[in-house]
Image (cartoon, rainbow, N blue to C red):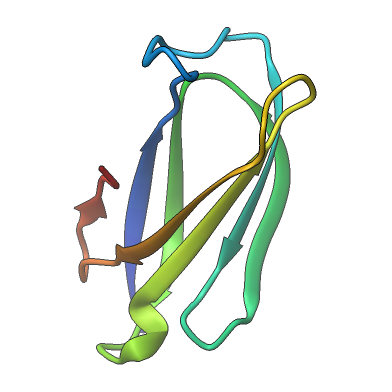
Length: 90
């Protein structure tokens, strides 16, 4: 069985306040090989992204891109995935 990990997103606006819970977000998850792993519409300021492939290589350095109407797009890189654990980008 392949190893996996998770990323926990805590999304805030430009004033560092949590975004509205009903705000529709487009989340893209891209691995270190530039392969899109997931693209989903979600809602909420706290978003767990689970079951991401982990293979102890540069592919474990993920990019997260978030789009929401009325906001500038945001991206996080690198988000280093932890084997069988959880990463929280800062």
